[in-house]
Image (tube, rainbow, N blue to C red; front, side, top):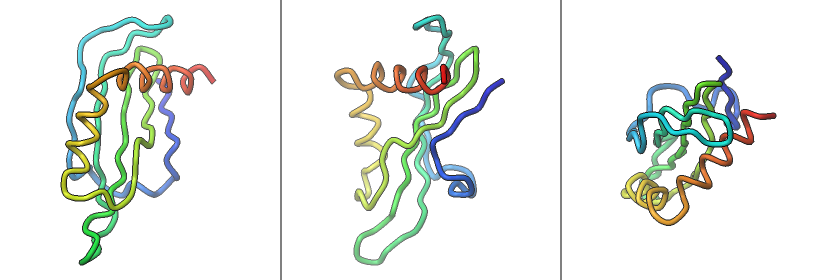
Length: 107
């Protein structure tokens, strides 16, 4: 099974500080069967004034492989993870994320 990532090797050094499954089950799109979409937050460092520097990633699991993609990063405040999850679940966020993942798996 293929696993792809656009995150620099060695940057993720442990389990995520937070994670949330945004979708699970089976959904077909462009010939792929998508089984799970998950958002993860990795806290890379903490600044006493700016707070946590977070790397937010999205993981899309399909029948042809998985992709972990950078979603956002930076000093985004204490609610960075929840804000990103809300943004993905509204409007066309999941659709755009799925399309991005399927393009990466097709390359």
